[in-house]
Image 1 (cartoon, one colour):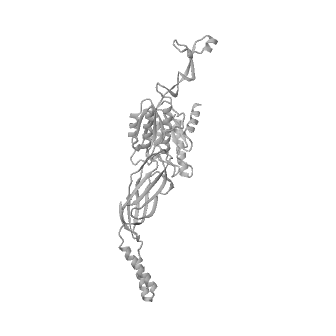
Image 2 (tube, one colour):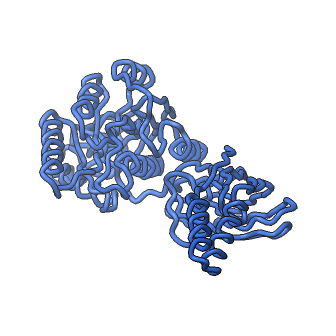
Image 3 (cartoon, one colour):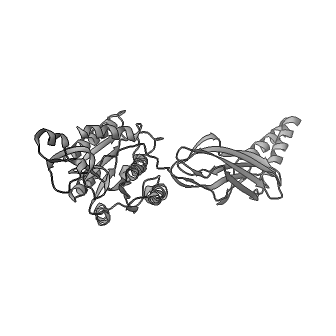
Length: 424
């Protein structure tokens, strides 16, 4: 962009100057005549003004470009006049990426620069998840008269990367009983090896001596074997609702429900992986994002990268259309037959709970973690909250577990409360 325009700063001065000169002549007032002559001279000078040059270079330095959510970094911007003329009035606004908040300093400056001189300003940004590319700095230069200005851009490619650490606050993510034949953390309704008592049965040849109920043998003479509740690993897919309808906030400056869902997905992923479960990630939105269930530290790094940088998990709502039938068919083809789903959605529209019902009906047990973005400050907000509560009640009545989560509370605390309730 390179636009030259008049500022109209001297608009009307010529007429006023000529009027003053005429009055001075008519009244024979030297002072009034002098004012008129000076005014005419300034107006004439303004009409001969030429557009300022754009011979400037901008350098942007970021103290730390790889950050975690909530971290702060200092941005230092230097502008140098590499031309041969003085810039008497130079104003610059840096291209701060959308979504990043300035916490200290200012991303703008107004100064005058002689040839070869530099001006520096700095400010501090708070990082949020994702890749953030700086836009070009917007600059306006004016000549000495201020009658003409040139608006142009100064570029210096700069990117800040913010990647969640996937540190779990949850010890036990609530899962259903659909499991695979490997020892893990999910308790089942089957007896076998484990630590929690399940039942006793008649002794069978080959049963380990350590599992024989010797007290009962001493008391009744009968040989019985103690069985414990088996714990196995689960295959879990974390499904994050990233449709346009999920980008809701309780207040304008708050993170969206999608942002809370992504944070919860990272938390749950880390906890499940630490427990030995096979975990994957999928996005429910126009953009595709899929990480097949797996284990290990390499898998953890892949999940971290996906949640941080995939287009499906962008900070802003998607512009593309969402086709529910196509997306559910896509998801069903990818879900392993033994997978259960942890569905993360604010449940603030009619289709959101329908996803949980359909997946459950397909044979994939569903647990919903729902960040609550609603408030009760206005009548409309109270109505939205009541409708969301009704959707949660309906899902629970249909046998789907729902964790109603206030994002102001640690996810681990909320999950622990729900686990205790479901264990009764």
